[in-house]
Length: 285
Image 1: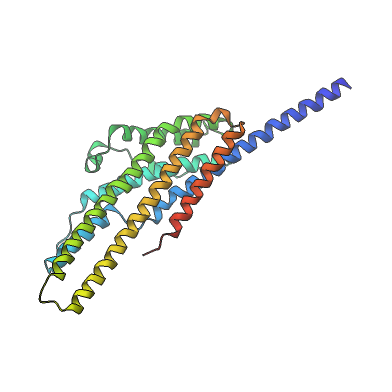
Image 2: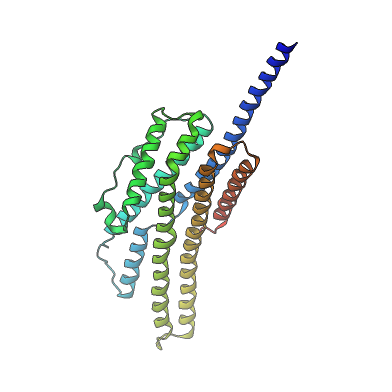
């Protein structure tokens, strides 16, 4: 009787441990899945540093009445886009790994976007600091270790802990480069076209109807720019939510059985889903 009772008790204990582990990983998977989906909205941002450079050139050509424009020098902007895309791929790659790892389905990830080394000459155009270069290298190493079978489901703690610091550095860089650097270029563009249209409506040779058409055109262009800024701002909020959620996960990765921790992970995933919905509601221009 005693042996049978002990055997049943042990069976219940081990079953509880297994179920608890599954629940914990489900919460981690819910968070990482939402985060990955949110971060991938980068690919829906229909604007770039190079496009801003081309827009500026076009405005200048129109202003100067140039019919056959010379080629724009957008090399620095192309470099900024290239590096931004590399950083995005590192962030996305890590979250993809976390999603598969927490679902016990770690598959081979295409590492090509992460094999390019960031050099000082590459980074000069957008002032990337040494810490960001090191973070890119570190997150790449974490991913390589994961896909080389050094990480598996039971080692998810090591994966999250090893990645958190470089992940935070990279996601902050991605956020700043889009929500500050690129958004500031759009602010400059708004000021530029405002000055141009103010000069036009002060032109005494234009009729009232022509001036109204000019103002109409101005507001249309302003709406297009502000829609781009709204997209960048909403994406920025989603990145901040993702960074904060991952920090909570890293800080509490050893306490996933605690109810409050599971609730926090659920809330983080829900908040990120809200950001995804907000992003999708932005009118497409």
